[in-house]
Image (tube, rainbow over all chains, first blue to last red):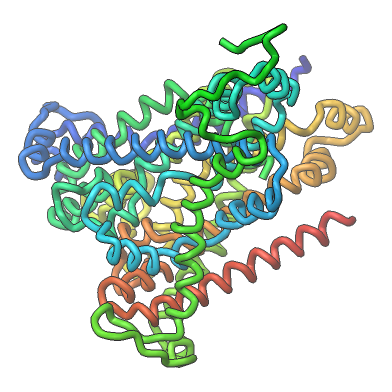
Length: 275
Length: 306
């Protein structure tokens, strides 16, 4: 390696390091503030690390809002949506990938096209439909709008298309039904793609904000993002409490991401480039 | 499991659920049906319904009244619509280039095999992307606090006067843009990285052999080969920016300095209950987005044939 490229390597490293500090700083500040007693939070000049770390902010936050209720709601809604999406998307993806039928490509294009329809166009009518159908202020209304995704269908089809047709032919000749082929041959073979879609869908559904905002005004049904947003508008100057709430929201997200990041980033890049 | 060999005759019909999916002719329709039904119900039908709604007046009570183009006429003279549209324009025209350019820079820096902690860096830059918008906005509002916020403290340390950030109409938009760039940078970077990895090493090496320096290699070799990726990033960032709701709803600046179009549409529909008018505005926004998408698409086609 030449002298010049060795130097450039370390310059690159330094620049990226500086940038990393900027990217992480907000999270560091969040955690630091969350563990500071109130008095220390509102002091200027601020301290970088808590001088007297305390759990008071968390305890007060738990007293004021049903944090775990919101968390549980999010968990329920997100899990249902994720399981449903993976199921529906893989079924549909298989149908589009390995069968020939009238209208196949047209219908597939139509599904892809829905990715281009921006939600402000649909949200008003969707809300009205939900109201008429009695799907406001309940879990069903929260869950049903997220039980599939066009990106998911697209991604599943791309993966399944590359599987050899011979596998299905052989299974058919042995008397397997179509659904069995899906269940026992296709699904095991696309496990990595299923994992990626699961992570993706889970992350997206967990952070969903506008739909819960529209259809929920009963506090016991609020999902986590909505719950803490509502909470912040009531306690808008209580930054010490907001930092506690944010910490409990973000730390799990970051932890799960760190554990699954390889698949997450791989799937993201793959899906976007093939699009 | 399956019958094989001599027993190739069709097995006797079983009444289990697994059998009720028909043969290869019928099964695909059953497989795609749930998904198709979902998209019809949740996206296509509402989108189609929004169209006639934009020609009506309706406040959820009583009957819908067909009023022709009145909503659209009103949009033309609605100062709030134009203000939020201008805000959205600034937000997009400033935020998107900054985000995409920075992401390209970071991706280029990261795209070295000899870089220590390369994967750690990529993870760190991506962390803001996966965090909840609500929590992230909380943190930044706190960082931006004019009296106790960390940013003004750091500015003071380097001798710069404190800024009002989100509390002043002139600085609120810029503050929002800085936040959004931080939040989305990692996502764009990962896309660029994937694109960069599609450029074969030999192409770069050939350029070096031909005597090209780093800048020339970047401008004449890397950048043209990254066209598809750049286009993708610019397009998705633009659409996302034009459509933004959450950030505008949560990060409120004084005098509507951070209010974007979608937030105004939301308030018109769900606070003042003017369903028809809000639908009309949504249609206009949709048309603008389609137009910009078309323009970018055309521009890409032009640039590809040089």
